[in-house]
Length: 178
Image (cartoon, rainbow, N blue to C red; front, side, top):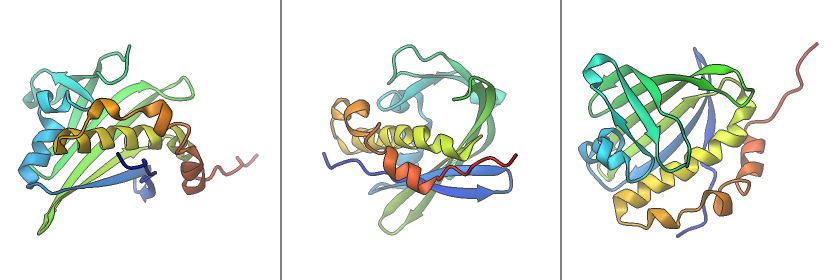
């Protein structure tokens, strides 16, 4: 396995500050779409969902971390095989409940498919914790889709706090104004 890299970058959108990460796959767009939407394939790298997506929400459980509760994810947009946007409400790093919006955009070119993964940041400095986590999960996705050893990817050894300095540089903390 190669040394994990911090790949998240800041992006300011109309609705707030986001962290955006990308991964490229030598695979057709339909295969990558299935890897990020099919519950069984999701289970190989992050978690599983249950329910009826046509209802507008599913229950998702991250299975790669012990003790994670199920969360209801509302489907804000689903345009197979190019766009999935969901929203869940759960506790943030400050102990308060926040809306966590996640977006997956897929683009296909002559060499495969690029996944653009984004998450809104209630506070930009939360990228210091969130960025290494998404690099970890997206590297697990790459391993799951390329025949790599997903279990060999170690968050505590290789991602956090190892990637923290890069995220602190990309998402600087600005002093609050009085």
